[in-house]
Length: 214
Image 1 (cartoon, rainbow, N blue to C red):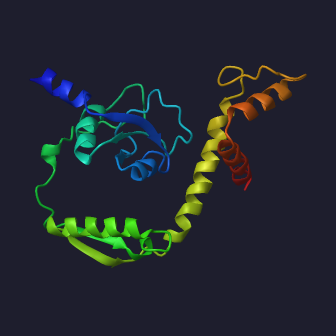
Image 2 (cartoon, helix red, strand yellow):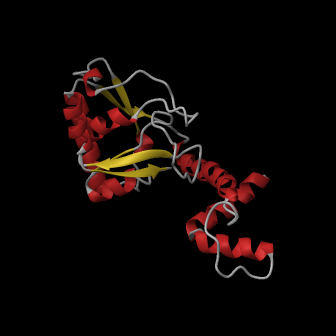
Image 3 (tube, helix red, strand yellow):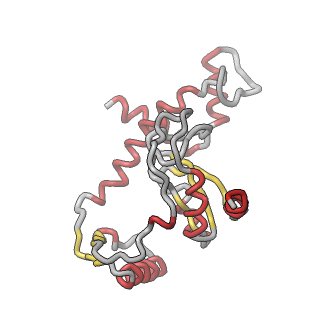
């Protein structure tokens, strides 16, 4: 019975990724599949090469929330090789409540802004109606006035972490080493890091250096 269940779960169509601030969830939404980022510590990060230690978690794409739940059940748990993983009791779909009656859900009004497309807003409202049908009390007058600053805070925190995290890749023990090493140790490191890191990562390293000096 257990082997049959494992075989069924492991045959779920899925793709593994990592998510810092939406790297799995955002492309999933563009492609019409389900992207899931577990809460930090629920899944082992052993073997993951993180861009940002404080934010990155293993994540995955599936065809539905139900498939994500099934796959998540066999992935969560404490890993002695990852000190950030948590030892929590197992959670399964059977533990989920059949009704949301008695649960109050607040929707910040700041999330309804000019950046939300009409298609996204339509799906948003559909999700709200489904929550109400399930018995939840949905409050749409909640306000988080500091929300406009959240993206700036995110960029400062992640860039600072990226700068520190990427410092290990000096082309000596870790990372790509340029075939054109130059005439000095410093030139070899500069060329290797320039070739290895994408423009986005290089920009974050520069920004992190600036923020860490403040």
